[in-house]
Image (cartoon, rainbow, N blue to C red; front, side, top):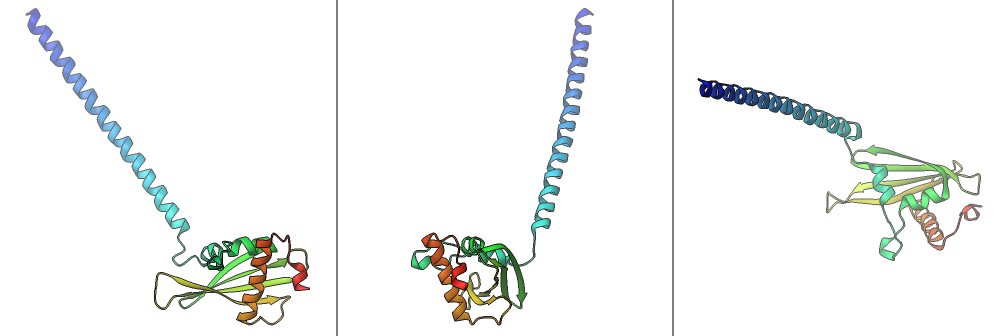
Length: 172
């Protein structure tokens, strides 16, 4: 009888232990589910908040190194942010062509500048784009030609490479 009670007690304790283990496992699974759900929701909101639904033209132009083939590894952001005071970077689209407009005041001068850069798909490779200056406007005057815009930007890139603090004298 003593032996059967002991076996009964052991079976009862084992059953309670198994029940406790199953309850803890269920609770752990619920906690895991809640954590994974929260992570999934955060990821979805992050993607939704950062999704623009199209090409980020500003970031593309900012990172572009137009003179890299000539050994100058400066980006548009390096140069324009250096020589334009508080530059305002904006983008717009016209069909499959994007434009990035950078405007502000030339550092060391009171002259306003507007740089217009065209971003268009490459005809032979749809995954690549062509990034070219379109025009530059000074003090609201008529926009320059593309060739003049390229020349002005080339000067700014070379001035940055030489370590010049400002380029205001070039625009006087």
